[in-house]
Length: 162
Image (cartoon, rainbow, N blue to C red):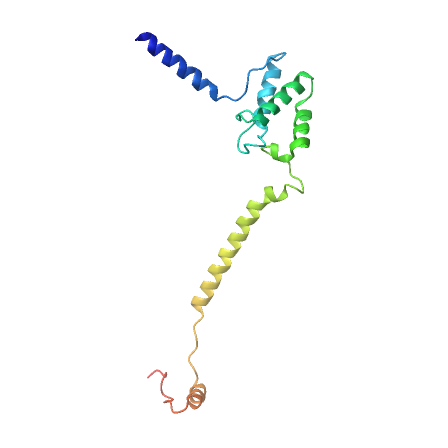
């Protein structure tokens, strides 16, 4: 019975560790391993879109992790690796894309929409307040006689306050 529990616990323990998508690789030193993990977390998977290449199990993420590993072993800097990925996949692979003419809408679009929505709400509220305070003035005696003449036989005293 104890052996069955041990086997089940071991199987569950092995399964829970399989959630990490970063595959084990050999590195020259710990700083290189740390850079590898930082880059893999910093870059977005082109296929998964909402996962880093560290979290993704897609074939392209596995390939990109291999590319990062190869470039680190070649001695390339983090900026060189990121520039390579951006040149190949565009700014989309960055979770924090740089401000440029192509990404300006991404950076300022939400704020512009928020400001436009606020302006629309302000105009609606102001127009409702203005219409609420605007009341029709009563007709003068001459206007009432003219209206009665236009309406024909209507009594000119209708509509007057008594």
